[in-house]
Image (cartoon, rainbow, N blue to C red):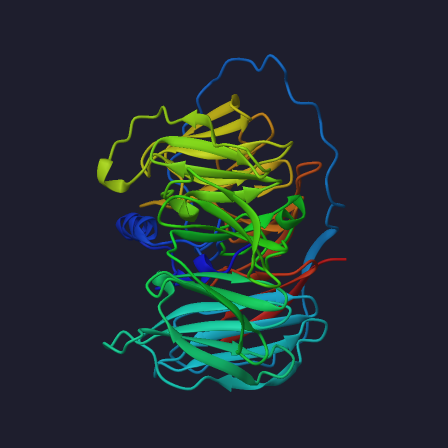
Length: 482
């Protein structure tokens, strides 16, 4: 999953906001330039409004049962693992947590505007290094993203300082600040790779790869930028996902990146060198809506512009082909385009939301063929989970979720729809409702009651067997699987 969306999300509160705030934030995200379909940081607590399932004609070629792509998680009752040896200063509204391997990372913006970071060994809960306070003070915070090779945190001055934001890169092993630089998240595409972080500066018309350790440029090229995004495969769909909105893993896995210029030409570049590979395709257009309107997956690029979805096979001489045109009437024309939230959704299908915040269909496509279509009231986020796709939104009644199987049928009960869903691995999910956390095995649809659980802050940071969640002025670490 790409980095830009996660760092753009301005997480203003840990509690579920009123519906008018949800609508306003969704419109703000629509206006924001987004780097990649793998974008991340929408709150996991922002979930779906009233769900209305619509009957559809029988599928003439019903999908066959598919074996789970990963081994089911062996869920068990929550067991607290020691005391997390990281405490936030008093007065912090909310914190964030991420787990990468055996390391758990936590972060916050303090009441005086300082950004804090901490790290623990998830096997013991013991601190790995002293709490790090980053230099400067900030009126807002774009959150933290933890990667195997770096921790990234971006503060927002909100006081007229130019540039308005400061990006910090911290060593995950020691907590030491490696480097920082001023930037504007809204004017950059940000792609995180194992060796470099790529910043595509739209205003400066310059794309640069920086070394994670030194912050020095590794390569750079000039040119007008419409959007920049990475390439993905099915292997990028299995990572745990908390508040992140994108379907893919945070760390880009591909060896190439794609950029659309102001003439609508899509060009492929080698990540190692920044040099063009020699392949380019005209006719990309600008793309609009969630995830910048572009998604590169399994050797194809999909683009949404207004009511149209098109596809391009990434081979020499190929041209853009139409796939689908929106059908659901838009109740609020000022809310933007009608197709949103492109994502892979199992069995080689591509799913897209056709509609707006108030009424929409989730449409599953096999090429240009509609395999199934399910009516929902609205959608904030849509994420794949094994052969399923979860759709989330919110109303004045609070969070609401649906979990659609390979036939487009919602498998949640009425009570469960009032909860929130979090992807654990490619074939398992958390379901939080009625004050309890449940483990959901998507291979068997078995629910395991993990026990009472308070979902605070921006939701838990999830690993393969443990989670970290905010609790009071600190954090708690739980084991949920054997």
